[in-house]
Length: 553
Image (cartoon, rainbow, N blue to C red; front, side, top):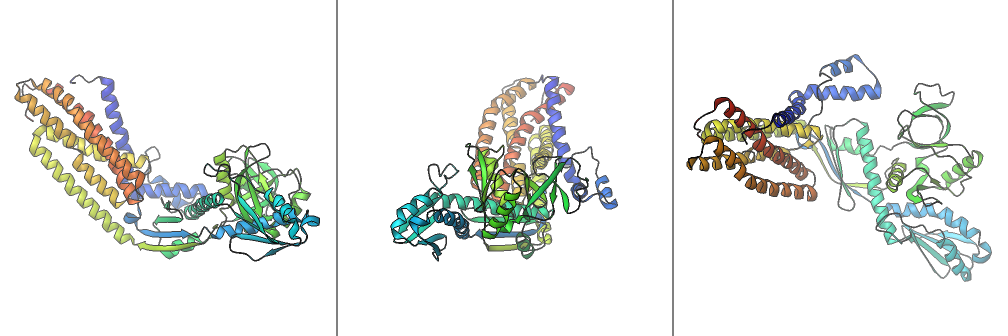
C-alpha cells in the first residue's frame, strides 16, 4: 500500500487536474458565459467588435463548459401545459376524406352517389346512395387501411370501418389513437423546443409529464406570458422546387431563388425557389410508414386545397426533386417519381424506423398539432434566484467549514489530509457537472451540501481502523496499510447502496428531484475516489518524506 507505482500516482493526479480544470470556468461565470454566447452569435449572425471582445475575454485553450443554472437559481418562467390530443382525430379524418371519396367514386355503379354527412368529432361518416352496395363499399374502404408502425400496435390497422344502413363510418382504431397521442406529444415537444431554442435561451427544460402534459421551464426569460407568446409562434414549413445543389453558401441562386442549407448533410446547400408550392398550413398528417419494398419511409397528406396544388405541381415535374423546408433549412429533397394525386405522398430514403419517425415529427413541426391548455404558470424573478444562490452558498459554506473543523479536531494531521481531499472533491463535482452540461438547481445545491457531509465518511472509517491497528502495537506503515484494506468493504457497501438510491430517484423523479439525484451520484463517485486514492496518495507521499517512527490519528 505504501509503494504506489509512479504511473498510478500520475494517473490519480492527472484525473484530479483534469476535473479541476473543467471546474475552473465556473469561478469566472459571467465572463465565460459571455464568451460562449458570443461564439454562438458569431456562428449565426457574423462578427461584430462587441462579440469579438467577448470572445477574447476568455482564453480559447481553456475549457469553457459551465454548470448551467436552473430556473430557481437564474429566474425565468414555468408552464405546465395539457395537450388536447383529441383534436388531432378530427384532422386525421378530414385528411382521409379525399382518399375515401376517390376510392368510392370508382365504385359508383355499385354504391351509388356518395356524400359526407356531419358526424361526431373524430368520426368520418359517408352516406351512400345504394344501401345494397354497403358490403362492396366496406371492402373498398378497408383496402385503405395501413398497418401501425410501432411495437404496441403490431398486427393492428390505423382505421376501423363499419356500416349501418346507408351510412359508412370510418374512425381511428384504439391502437392508432394511442400511437397518434404519442406522436402528438412528441410533435408538440419538438415544436416547443425549436421555438424556445430559436431565441437563444440557456438550457431550457422541456419534458413530458404523464400521458398528455408538458412541463416547460425556461431560465432567463422575462415572464410566463412572454413564454406563452413564444410557444405560440408558428414555424415555417414549405414545399418548394429545387433548382440545384451547391457546396458554396454564397453562390448566386439567380432571380427568384435562394440558397438554403441541408439539415442533415453538413456542407450541402440547395438552390430552391422562393415561392412555395404548398406550405405546412396545407399539411394535415405525416406519419412513419413503409414503402413498396418494405423499407421505412414517411407518408404525408394534404388538405383538399393543398392536394390540388401539390397534384398539379407533381404532374408537371416528374423526375425532378422538390425540397421540404423547415425554418429555412432543407430537411429532405426527394425526387418526384410520379403524379401524386389525392393529396398524399411518400418520402423514401435511407431511413431507419427511428429516422422515419423523427422525420414525420419534423414535418409536423411547423405548427402545434393540437391546442395546448396551460394549467399552471409561474414567473420567478432573478432577485429570488439570486437569493436562492446566496442561501445555498451560505448553507454549503457553513457545512464545509464545520466538516473541516471536525476532521482537524478529531484526527489532527490526518484530518488535514482529509480536508485537502475534501476541497479537491468539491472541485471535482463541479468539473464533472460542467463536463456533462448538467443544470444546477436548488435541490442540486442541497445534494452538494449533503455530499460535503458524506465525503468524509470513508475517511472516518479508514482513520478509525488505523487507530485500532495502532493500539495492537503495529508499526505505522502496517497500521495504515491494514486500515485501508479492512475499511474498504464497508466503504463500498455504504456508497453502493446510496448510489442505488440516487439511481432510483433519477429514474422515478422529475425536474428538481433528478437534479438532486445527479449531484448526489456524482458526489458519491468523487468522494470515494478522493478518500480511497487521493487521501491515501497524500498520506503515502508524506510518509515517504518524513518516515515517522510513530503516528497519531
